[in-house]
Image (cartoon, rainbow, N blue to C red; front, top):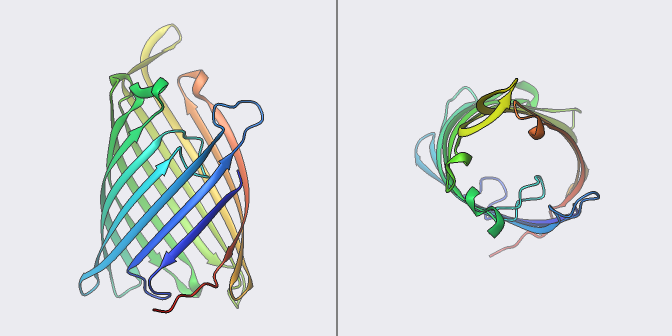
Length: 252
């Protein structure tokens, strides 16, 4: 999955507006089901409401997934987030979003509205370390009621520098997402029961500053999905290498 992306921000230190665009070419060895070109556009706007209270509005459009997943659907998301920063290097945030999912013609029964709400807390520690806890609840409402589900996502992220000069850093994230289908069943020991999936994801990223304007990143992702539907179980390992070049500083 080779990909290319660009990032824009209106201020290098404290941006109020940021935009990201990425295009990726997907090719798989044993199937052509997921072969495609994907596009992802993300726009963020931040505004300080009162002292230590900020609002962040995010709009995202992804066509045929992104470079990080196997989704072939289109997503349109608008998210509003309120953040409050305490004087003790602690930040708490609450968020709510409205999301539309649109699938190819053969899978249009999966078209849905998947809105969600969530919260997170971030603590900055000594030595440039950071830890974040998050929770999200989303309710997928599809054209076909069999694709309706409720999902809860729990996240834990930790980031730390690996050298005194902070040229090297390590970020690790763990996500656990149980999913309960409301109108879909599967057979277990000869009995029809509601389908339930459990997804575990572990991502780790090593970053090194090669030069003041050049950053190298090495990514590894492990994903495991368990389900009482035996045909929906899988394990995935993903490796990635990326270079970020930050040199085009525009002056207005």
